[in-house]
Length: 180
Image (tube, rainbow, N blue to C red):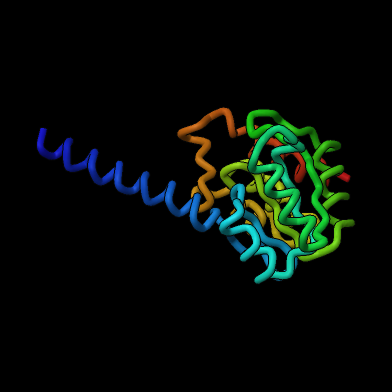
């Protein structure tokens, strides 16, 4: 029983640290010098990242949500900096067929760089779009691109099977591209 309590405390502490990291640092990571990925950033950390990395375009994978405070803050912050905001609504539970993924490739290819890609937690939707970016825009290997769909960023399909849709979307897109 003592071992279980101690294990529970350790797991709880790790969970709290993970959540704290996600909120304070925004699960922010560099893909390359032209692209960055994150969770939802807020009034206290978004301006820092946008300014520090010279972001020109923000791709919000949560979609336009005018009635939500975080969205209104994001719109205000990017507008103040003359940054383009692209709202592209995705669900981490919904499979994207290769043609839908190709539309994302076109957006990623055509926007002004550097870009910031984000969703709510920066784990699933952001991982998919980051993998697409690495594979299709940066022309990196499949193995290197798949690294974006990693537990390091919070992408945990073993614990949350519904997000396997992101892995399947990427895999089928690559298969589709290779078959051409």
